[in-house]
Length: 199
Image 1 (tube, rainbow, N blue to C red):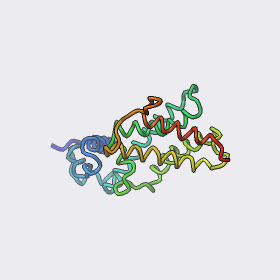
Image 2: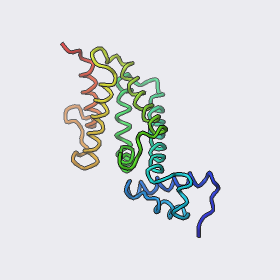
Image 3: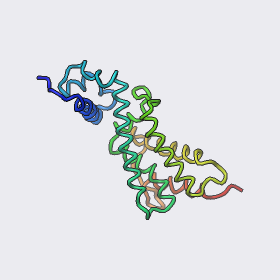
Image 4: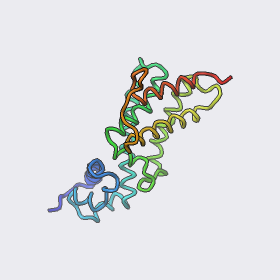
């Protein structure tokens, strides 16, 4: 039996079902038919809110990125964090998010399924990136390189390590000298070297 929905509640129900399917089956398992079946509506019903699968997955990615951004902002609201720790928040929370929700992480960067030029998604991604650049600029690291160079280097470090962890190429190990988790040790190395001026 098909479930009746008010106009507004179906849109949210579609997103909720998409998130559940994503966690269970990964990005490729989130199809319009599977979503409609899970919600209990006809496979034609979602088009009233999302024109196609890409539009629905882009909306889901936007929600997920907003949640991630809110978590980062919540962590940064602490006044007790030292400068370098504030920069590390972006990398560590992104990594922890990927480890806890690997399928959500994969969707966020899936160019074949998500429209990263969508204005709403682009806005929240820019907020995340610009906040990271602002922390870098405020840390006084930019005497010889601009904040974006540092941000891109940081972004590349965390994404590269995260992808290698998710594929099983790297194991979860600590630095043998200082005992810290590998990502934290790498971030310390990156930020400490960044503070040293070139001769």
